[in-house]
Length: 217
Ligand SMILES: [Zn+2]
Image (cartoon, rainbow, N blue to C red):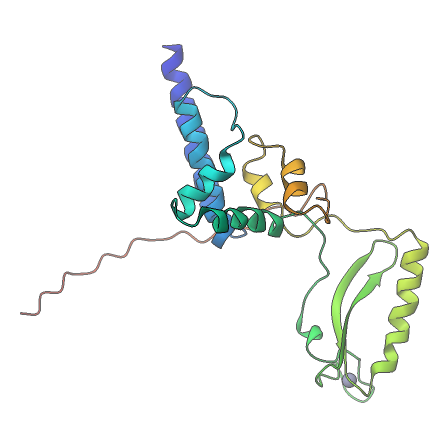
């Protein structure tokens, strides 16, 4: 009886995890495909009575996602997809990167002309919060203000806000792999940050719409 209840618990946990993956709007595209393939490998391990993923999981995930052909090429897909998910802080993006954000004197709002320089501007030297901005040729001298904030940020020891991007695989499969090691393997030059953004609200529920059969004869 114990085994039966344990199996049932495992199945319920797995179903809940899959539902969580599908409901997470941050988990899309290649990352979603990789997450589901990894979840499937876990299920296979479970059926085999194994408790660990072992060393072949990358190969198996690749085959599940793309089939056995061109394995070598697709294996780099696993690495690339995980590298894209490294938990990190990224400056806010906005329309300011393509257009000039300099405030106007005689009217409200930014200049809005096409930017000729683009850079990430330290908004708060105490925390390192930053955003991508652009300045047009006419307002380029305002970069000096940003340089002053950047110097203060450097003097403060370059503090970085908590991760606001990536870490979605770790969020759903934290008990499966040592993600710090996996992220370092996929992207050695960018160590994974701790923490991270809380999941954004669930995707809206999908409803099955049933169409009448085509029967115009
Ligand atoms: Zn401008």
